[in-house]
Image 1 (cartoon, rainbow, N blue to C red):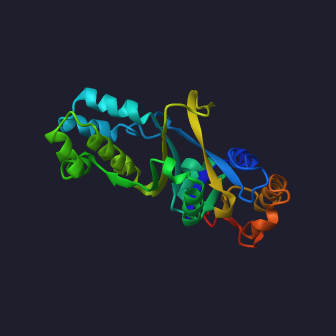
Image 2: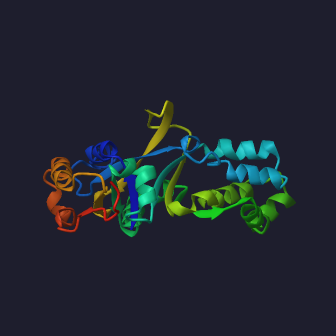
Length: 263
């Protein structure tokens, strides 16, 4: 299971987006909700998207070659999840200080549906982060066959591109407590932007199959009974005529109240 900690406002926006994929007939059974993957440069980790380029510089990859790879890849967009299901630190940092929710998904179902719909092939990464420091990432790159191939023929950028993409799972070790499971999409364009904390954040939409939705953990500082009522109404409205196909959403265990003693 993977969990997305977020605010009640963001939950409402995500659930209000439920619908078919744009390239599928509206009558198709499968329904999706859409997460915003934000530009990496807007993340709370200032080293985000810089770990690999900085390592390349330390390991004698030219600035021009790094720039070429970055331009080819486009902008990195990231949607973050955690393998922690009810964690005080996660509530404080990402769950509106305990007044939000954690949306839980079965990642295997996600991958199965994405493979069927051709979505998986469009992603640069979907999986666990690996937490590193500078020495870790330098050692990994030095021992990688793609690095050796590039160093033997610097006119061939393809091995460098493969290596760059392999290293996307790396994140600074200071964030190890998050146990992050992330999605990375690379694109030249965005689907839009939103304002947050005085910054404009470009994003791309990532469709998640509703059938992968397993639970909503309601934060420790939220009215549990009212949340069940209100969130259920949003789901029923958005899945009108389709709710019967998603029995997990109406199971008694779908809603859980955080057990963290935080007021």
